[in-house]
Length: 257
Image (cartoon, rainbow, N blue to C red):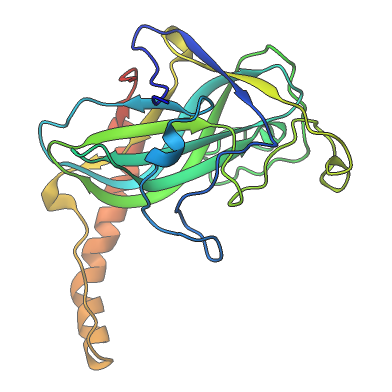
């Protein structure tokens, strides 16, 4: 089976998400799920319920430092479902190594502040999906400081499950203490592209000189000296990265394939 790459001219892509056949977890920030870490994702990227969006080979090294968000325009034929996102580094040999991932449960899309990028975000109570309605969501992929090397590609993989890292959503919209008592349903989930509904990932790019410096603390006596030397620069870089994120963060948009 070939990976499901979305054509650059597509305006949407729909896939069937079956909670009984979730995408298996491969790597990531896991404590008890093995393997963990930047594991090659190609074994699960051939599934029909995984949509791949890949840039061309990079012409130069690309430095990324800061918060990562996947902004998606989505719809479903169910009253509740999940959407997942994985950022990977595609090596010249075709392997696709996980950098960060995240998940978004649609019933929790509203709250005090519906923008997941706002520090005050906290859903007050669940709100079910209106089937067929298009929603804008932001999947938080947390933070990273990473270099995509020249000749590599950047990939965003979208699906609706990553189990057992995240419990599969049965697509029922029921309370958590009730949903396992009922038969799950298969969802037809859609991702949109183009115009006002351009799904994309925001990458906070920096230059090589602006990358954080590595601090090696070899013994207790070196802690104070290292802190005095490096922490002011680190604080300045954090402030700069926050401003950069708000003003000029690079956006990888329709490079689908």
